[in-house]
Length: 159
Image (tube, rainbow, N blue to C red; front, side, top):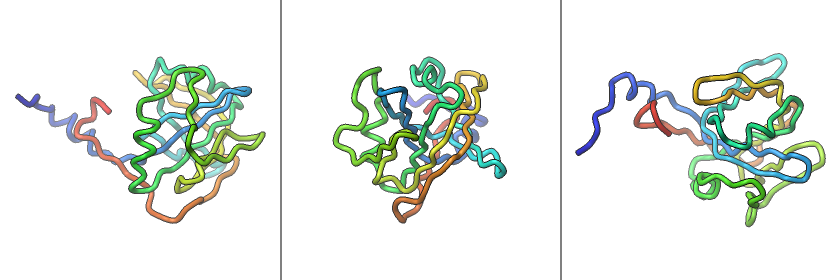
C-alpha cells in the first residue's frame, strides 16, 4: 500500500532544482558527487551555495579556499546521474571513463557537461541534516549548448 505524503511535503518537493556534479581536489586526491541543491546567492561578488548531506567525507575536504567545480548538467545526461549517484568512497576513482579537464588551479571539469563554474570555498553553514558550502565563483564557461537539467521531487522529505 502506498504511503500518503503530507501536503506540505508534496508542496516542498515541487520546488525545482538543477542537477549538478560537484568536483573537488584535495592535494592529489579528487572526487565528485551528484548534487541538486546548488543556488546562486550573490551577484557581486558572484557566489553560490551547495547543500551537502552531513556525514559525507567530502565536507572535510571543503575548507576555506579549497577549489571546487560545479558542473551543470544538461537535459538528458542520465549517464552522469548513474555514474555519480551512488557516491564514491575515499580513494575510489570518480572519473574513470569520463572526459575531464584538469588544471593546477581548479577541481576537475566534466567536458560533456553543459557548463562549469570554478569556485573557492568561503565558508560552511549548518543547515539541519545538510551543510551549506558557500563558494565564490572565480571562473567558468558554457561548455556545450543545451538546456540545463531540472529536477522535481515527489516529496520534500527525501531525495
